[in-house]
Length: 413
Image (cartoon, rainbow, N blue to C red; front, side, top):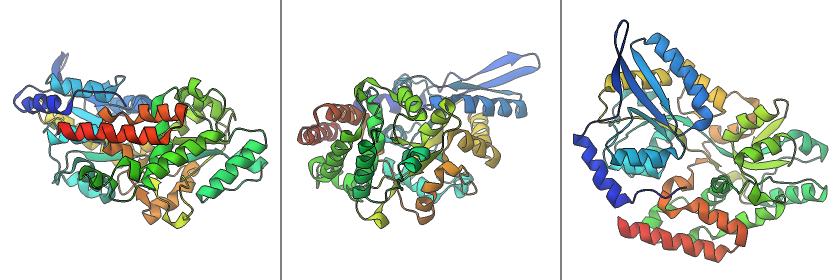
């Protein structure tokens, strides 16, 4: 997570957009008349090619509309900066996190609470938008969901006679067996701080309690109390990594795991397409993080990975809505989840990739919980604190730092 504009300054600036011009979308002249140009701004670099194909299809069906596919590095920071400058993209695709919450609260997006499109969206994901914003109104359409899962190499598991662990003790026992065989249990990529988040999200979501962040906001609980077990288990897993975990980044890890460098990969399902690019023949499986010794209580961390919001100040809301409706069509949404190994927020769609079979039971049972880091503002810098924890393994120092940063954030509200 990156440091961004302070909430107070950002809010003051963002409110001013309501009476200001919108994005830089414009009408571009072509040989047959005027063409409307709209901007689709999103934070999914791995999906840029997928969106390029969908945009090409949309433009063929709507020859009077051009869609510009914008996906800058540090997208959420760029988006906040643009909001402050009164330069808001027509359609925004981000996750249901603290950035979305801030933007919703200051009136950047169109209110879609009564939009008919929401009737075709899984209610749980709509509720997640309300939970993260703490608002009754809804300011985006949930589009795709992802999931935190342990990705494993089926060939290595078969070679070592391993079965999928269902409890925390079984996970540690499995890691010990792999380590004893001379192989690496987990491949870590801590050069990129954010890669600490998938495993920590799973650990925290299953141990912090259902009302942790509501209680935290009311001063009834602290990270020291609610996240101690998660932090301790995070440190325990570090015992089963490889040498130079701090020198490897996300892309390195995808390739290394694809080549058999470890038996398991503590990531999310978004890594699967990249792993398969590096080794199309690899046999992968995924299972929910078994965080406790009560398998019936295990919840799969799954949240709104991508939502679609329309700028309230867009000069081309009709065209922007037409593009969003296009993306929501079953055939187009299916193309997205197929290429991105994601789950759809649309009721009629299911994920058919057999690689993800190990997660389907959680969806059927509704054993799902949102990503904890969606409720933590970027200014708290959770990923960087976790990266430090991988170095010094000082749980007390880590929790104390989180509590101190949270207090600062609360003081700025």
